[in-house]
Length: 212
Image (cartoon, rainbow, N blue to C red; front, side):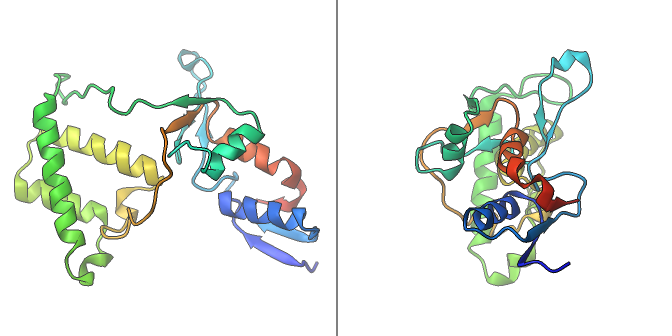
């Protein structure tokens, strides 16, 4: 069969492109997806164990950053009447591997050192642009001789503020370019029923156009 358009990938970009085509009268197209689910880097997993009480866990993109009216994702939230929960990033208690609390002053000191270290290398020659954020973190821990308990706090920060934010492992993120973006103003939000609830709503009218 021949198509007017073939869209590669049923992630958010692919689904948005398909929606745009349909809205503009182009209906003879197909969306090809290599994985067994749509949504790209958004995937909500619901554990079967009863202890989770039906709560969904977002394994990729997890939150809406900058929940102002200027954010197109928030516009979609309102369009599909999806419930959101405002996040509280600062309301966190960290523990080391022995289940002892990590003092905030110690952890914040390490975090500041790492941020200064990151800024220094980002400003270096472009030859470093091929290195991943994981490479830099390993080097920082080795050079600064960060103790195991404080490594736990640092790794938590990297996971929560970088991997969760960009929905990718730090080994896949460029040391220089990973945060080369702009943010919308306003607080951050989680989706009550997971990011897949947004994907499901967007794709409702595209089911017969998507081939997994």
